Length: 595
Ligand code: F6R
Picture (cartoon, rainbow, N blue to C red):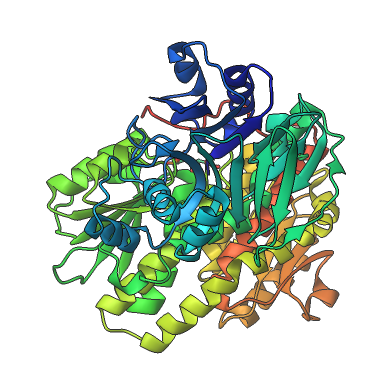
């Protein structure tokens, strides 16, 4: 995720661009840049946040400019990889949010035609492509270039001798702000609310030309579309959170996008990904902490099911001090921040024991990307709320991709791989359907109103999801919550269950469903309030459960994702009901860089 802005009008250009970018810093903050049209293109970029850029800017004149704040996805954070990118003839500057899927092939083709590159980014490929098709009409060149591109984007381009900004959108947000003799472009309305509340939302496949005097929107066929502006009645603070009360809720709702973005770069070439060792894989380990550990636990079930490779999941903090020397050919480290001290130490330790290390992280250029032998990036965008939500879901997606890759290597189940890919393609939609039911979760959260302790149970691949559900609950609602494999209940914890201790049970269709029903009935018989999470159409729950949450039907392999999202919402509504500081729970930090 990155933030893009554009301005056409007579205000102080650098002030408007910087101010607007600052409002988008939640979308990324590892480098920033602006391009201003002033007879020629004046481009300034810096590594770091927008203040770092501001400190370096000379006074600027001009009526048109674009800006960018970056969250690295393609190439590490650096001045070279910062936007805007400029064509070789210095005529066109471009900012981009999204991922160009076929950038490697496009880069090869452009290099053959004599274009040279100064960065590792997919965006630089796009600016050269636009320049290649440019014959004096920037809008036409952008439209032509985008025909060669596969992927997701929101872009804004300017040229040296015109007062127009050309923008385009496909699966990344872009909004146009309408003023009097001035107009705005941004990734979201937050960036422009100080200047205007009249906005036009661009839709997928559309382009637009923005100048000080007007805005024209064009459909995918190139015909002009008339779309009247809508009025935004948010305050600036409300808008920062996209109208959501908390970042956590906003990030929960961003999950369909986080899933698509993570899938887009990998799904097509899953079988070929260069992320595993060449040696024979007869075992592997996954090491991580907290929520990332739970994602690894889900990964264990998926990988073992699809490949037959035995997977051991260990807490990074335990592994790093363990004395075993057994050789393990592949060690996977999961860390959304890429900076967790225990996971980094575990990575070093695994390397010293001769293992090939694969890091799964959400932060390009983070310490773990430099430490590990290979990296599988998740593309959830920056997560502000301390409780991990969209980064966890993106980690699950990475687990499926890794499982598919390993299944290909081990020669297991090509039919299963095809099924996995097809199911993954439907996942963003399935998660959206879960989010549409948020009101049900809010209602069900009543079961926890007076609870001091809660149990979450599941079996098989949904057992670790219940560990994650319990972790989310304790983290933000401060209710003691325990995740258990349902079969373990009668080996101790059943002693704690009574009328004041609710039980949350995942009873989703798979080979353990009947066993789950028996376990839940045993608990219900002891008077514990029961919340059952079932699939649409389930009737068994009606006689057993006090509350029911229904989830849309999915391929059972993917149920940890839809279930995980449901449990996030549940924890959120419990914490909200209690009026707790959801985005910053007491005693916790987003990145745990100490032991
Ligand atoms: C819980 C949470 C933590 C992190 C853990 C590891 O919501 O966010 O449990 O999962 O601190 O962090 P990363 O993934 O950055 O290594």
